Length: 365
Image 1 (tube, rainbow, N blue to C red):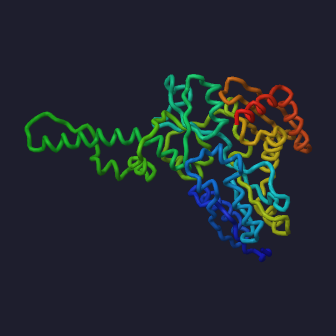
Image 2 (tube, one colour):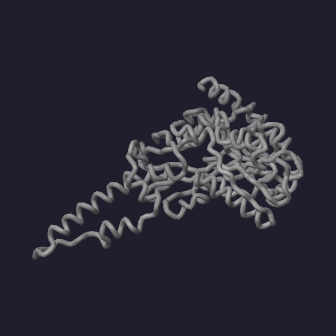
């Protein structure tokens, strides 16, 4: 597809979260006189509803179908969540734009706002990530970490369903009791300020859907990307706490988006309009370390980088699958040589035992 001035067609996944975050890119481009049409594409990952995200990530299942539409000339570019992107991509494609990153942290979501330390012994925590599972077990070996499937909305519904359904049952029983006492001269007092109908009307849409969901696993908490909660609009409707980066180093590229195009004049135009230099450097460091370790999605790896003055401060963790073994590192690399610095950090991690942990994960796979 030839570049048509300021008119762009950009591919995106069709999930609510993907469309919302692609809308941020669309708005940024349109602020600079581009006209943008978002083209929703169903990916292989979207079609395999029962597969874990960790399994899908191994084949870039949320990415490759969108990239192929660019290669085929059907669209001008594609918008990805950077943490979903394989470290290797077709030579014809380039990451033209990296907008400013949202929060890179993970978030612990609970029905009642408990922190990770306040969860009861043996609490059930849901996650679709090998990294998050290993980090949770490393921090709290007593936790029971169970698989959690679905998009952000679905996962939140699965967490909220048992609590909301129990409350609905209790409210309904009390309302029946209240009606039974109407007209009688007794001391019964209705314990709620609102009727069941009024309570239901005040629920958020995600809570209403949770009431209708069949409960398979009762989770005490779930762990999601904080950026996903914020971009999906769910952050205002759930109780959550950011997990500290010190113990829960995030996935490379988490919270960041990437606009992929062919390496043409269009790439330079997109780069000029939306590329955020700080985010570009930080995510380049993170993904360079991931690529050098050759861990992909098969091993629990966390890498987070942040520019501090003339250096990029890097924290990285590599775990065994059960979280019982870990190799951690904190280093500063110069901004001016951040790529070569990231490669040195990866080499040091490998020498300190990360290589063996990744090989063990590959054998388990």
